[in-house]
Length: 173
Image (cartoon, rainbow, N blue to C red; front, top):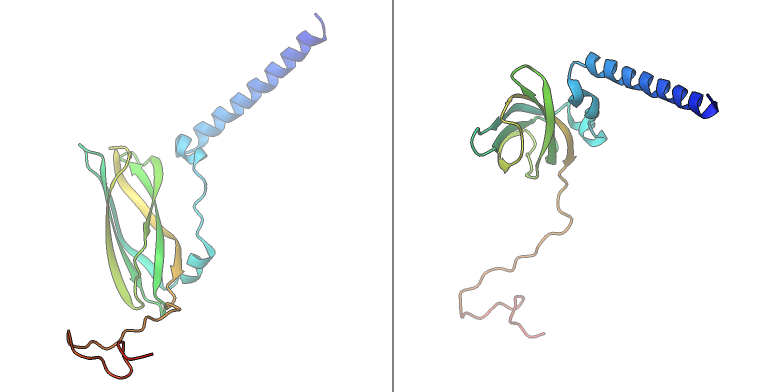
């Protein structure tokens, strides 16, 4: 028995201890493998500033049994003084036993005006398990919708074939 043999024995013991530690951590986790692999949910800084006035008042995620189409509907209420847009909603999906089965994200690119509500529905072809029966959704990102910087100039309409006024199109330059 040489040093290489004892080195292999020591290495095997370390690997065995690491595997035993991983198995105990996995079994101790209430969410199973999904709880270990999924990162913590974080809210962006811009969303954190607006969450006191913008809320997700209704969310519903359903999976059709035959065609795996996902129907997601959300109602967002904006009680603040600023319009908001690009609202990212992250949903954690659960099966009938309450086990977390994954997460999915939807982005509302429309603008929800200040002191207003908006309802949005998505029909997506996604590969989400048919066993999903419950979802827990929250807003994780959004932006203030700023007024456009450029304003389009619209000329006054004239009758078809009529001469334009002195300041409109058609005058000599």
